[in-house]
Each structure stands twice: as structure tokens, then as C-alpha cells.
Image (cartoon, rainbow, N blue to C red):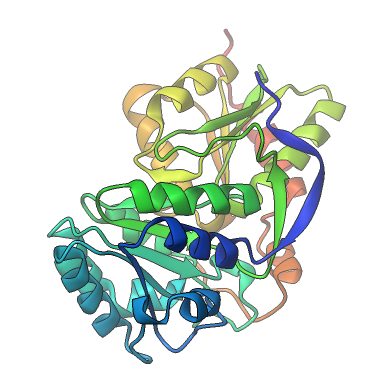
Length: 320
């Protein structure tokens, strides 16, 4: 298994901001829409570079989505921006009826995923993956780090059809080596082999999974790690191959365990390969305001919680 990880993770500033401008340079059909959140969604640099291809519609995400669909029908490739909660909760009917039902070539970019917002439940996108994954024909992405953000934006521009992507902003960790890792829509990324339990993560909790795997190895538990940057379409073949070898699975996500990664994996296992499954994430609750570090600890999205879940899953395995 190829080592795709950097020896030392780094911090990068604004990978989405830089990459969106680079895509705009190469793809004149790309246009950008915002909802009065230019700097907050890192589209201000695109506005400065391409003022004729930038459209601020004000605090009106429903209108923003509808306008983008019209642009897509005219051959443009619109990237639509807001906080994830506003694009999914507020504009859900427009996304469903105008984007998904028509298969419109619209790219929805939702900033501040999950518990990364300090502003409480009105701004914490904890069910966005579930809402978007439900829509027929919608591709759903949750990149892990700066490397995947940079590569995923290009993949979105090249992909024909609607896409929803969670996006991190400002200071973003770089965990995956940009020289060796290649993001592909619909492809999972095996990062560590293991025979006792499989840890499956999506988005920024990749590091949580890697840390949990190291802790388990110190206890003599061999943990495989699988990163799922695409929630839909899910890489069933890769998941089933690794799950079959490990015999037990733990999912880890910055999201409710219902509807997101945990549910997607449960659906696959339930249909094809029933195995012990434990899910790490929020459980039937809205989160309080607080720093991301505080919130991840409070709601048990930590390496320690993943280790405990792995122990439970391993004890439930049937003898081979």
C-alpha cells in the first residue's frame, strides 16, 4: 500500500481561494456566485481577478441557486457559495427541484463543515451530507485537507453534473502528499492496512482516524484506515474488500451519524457483508457554540472515542 501521507502535516492558508482563481484562469466558462459572504467563503480573490464572471446576489441563497441553474443551461459552469447550512437547509427546495431534478451542471460549495463553526447550531452544518446524499444524481464530496481541496476543485470543474462539496477555509491542514495523492471522484483512499478492524473516515477527521489507528497499534490491535472523500457515489468495492479482511468497521465523521458516512457504510454492509459496525459522530443532537476543539471533545469525535468504538467492534466479531 503506497504511503500517501506527509511525514509532517503542515498548515496552509486559503487553499480554496488560490485554487478557485487557478481554475478560473484555465476554464473561462467557470463563473462564481456569492451570497454576501465574499471573504468568508474565499471568493474575493476570484472577484478581483474576474469581476465580469463574479455575481453577488445578496443574502438570498434560493435566488443564487436558481440563477446558477440558468447559467448552467447556457453552458457556463457556476460555482455557488455560502455557508453549508444556508446552501442545504435554506435553499434545499431549489437545490432539489432546480439542480438535482434537472441534472444541472452546478457546483455547490458549502463552507464551515460540521463543528468547525463557533456560532452554534444555526451555523453548524451537521446534516448537510445527509440532505445532499439523499438527492438523486447529486455527487457529494468531503475533502480531508489542503491537498484534496486543491485537487477536488479541478475535479468538480471537469465533472458533468451537480456536485455538493464541503469546504474548509483559512488555515487548513495538509496531511496528504500532493506529489503522490491523486483525488478522484468516487474513489476511496486506503491509507493503512490492518487485519483486526477498519477505520473509515471522511473530511477533516482523517487525522483523527490516523491517530486512533496508531493508538490501537500500540495496544496490539491491527487497524486499517480508509479515507472516503466521496460520500456519493460511495466506493463500495474498496470498502467491502477492506471490511471483509478486517471483519469489523468503525466510521468517524464530523456530522450526525444518521444519513452521512455512518449510514452510507451501514447500507453497504447491511446489503452485502453484515459485520460489526460502530459509528463515531454526533448523535441526535444540535451542538452548542464553542471552539472546534471543545466541540469535538464534547461530542466524542476524538481518537480516544474511535479507539473505544474499535474495541467494541472487535469484541463483537464472529470467530473465523
